[in-house]
Image (cartoon, rainbow, N blue to C red; front, top):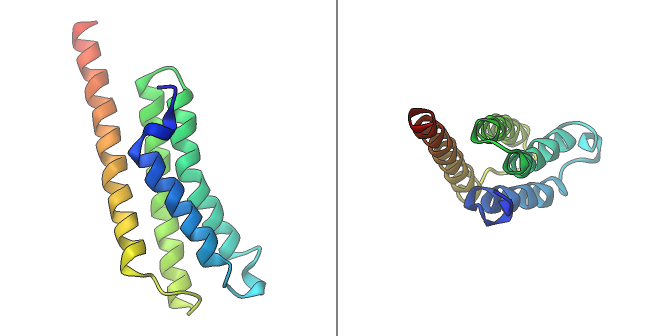
Length: 124
């Protein structure tokens, strides 16, 4: 797949990364190289993994990078919960819905890639 930007999962993850950058702008300055930086890295990792996976040749590699993106989403969600517990932000319903939607999209994409691989193996 050449144009990863056409993937809905990439679009949603890119928007989530943008939202995380906006959210962490208001974090305390002492978190600049701590939780804020961790959250930004995890958020950017999701669309980056999708782009890299789409640029690889095979569906197996792509599925692996989708799985890595899903792991980064879990990491980000944990960090958001910690930031909320520390009083740095409020995890809004919109942000939680974004996370849940993205998790479903990543699962669907991974399942689709794995199913395509299975079909190819049966016919190849």
